[in-house]
Image 1 (tube, rainbow, N blue to C red):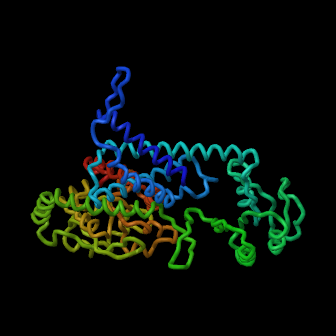
Image 2: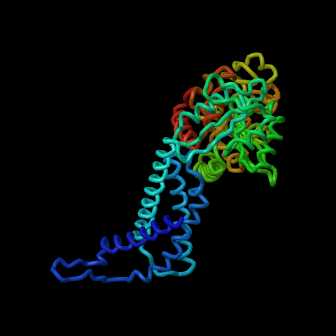
Length: 473
């Protein structure tokens, strides 16, 4: 930290003098005997900013984890930690100068200051990282690991450790759950099995152990508890591998509920800020399009009333949303009045395999309704659902509760994201898809690979698909 403070101070003075030369604050006379002449502001006026800038860098580097162990960090992670700390430092620096009404500071000086300080610190951290990697490969600065467990997970863990010599981890032995294997070599390797899980207190007492790592199955977690307490009693840090379940699509992460640590298993991708951004895009995007499309809404309303006087302009229907929440979904009415009463007689003509009903030449649809459906104009009132938060611009289409009740367990996963106005189904076939399984496959593909970038691509491809009526009937 002291060395980092010195580097930031050096960056401050370097930025100040570079800024002076670039802006003509200094002039260097080429004649012998002349001196460097300062023409404008004195550096003394900038010194209070230095006294604030250095502690901010150190504080935010602590918060970003720069001073945690770099043993397993990559160069990219080091850059990320430093860049994050730098952004917060700039923000704090700006707030400080505004709050205390410090003298005007040139924006070019601030850019130079950030660039120099980030560059100096990055060179230092990368240099240290590479230096310690080198000495760890030679066997110095190592930490002794005691591994507990067996099976495929343990085999992979050992391979990862042995393949990354620069981490500086040395496996001193393995504790097997089977006491009969004590004294043998683990799977033909040079690593000894030191005993069973009950022998851990003895091993810790007679071996130099820096860390204990439990790589066990969920069925063995009950036996691990006492061993963890033994590590705690002897002051040896221990870790428990979280992949104790054979998950196919779920992702594990540790979280806390008040003082209770929890193991979180999530099937949807994306972090909180990404979901927050998605909601922001939905809110402002739907509000904007409701304003832009309001003249079209008036035209469609008039067309519905002229071509089908009986019945309402908007068709409202209960749909299932996120995790099965019921909501009222809006559409422009495309069918004749009393169409729902005729549904029972048409079910035998269903063209869709699975728990959904689709009929390409539905006799209940009006002539104007066919036009609305071809270009998906009938779906536009759902922008109100998006604005209200019941739907999203992009997501699986909202199913009927009666369809959801027929879902198999694995099919219910399409309810794990908010339903949307458009989705992969919209751009990869629409009504050309005749199997619900194919439809479901596209929805799950979207859910498993969701990102803001993926949403933007789907929205961009939806426009031509709708304008040209691709796949519509």
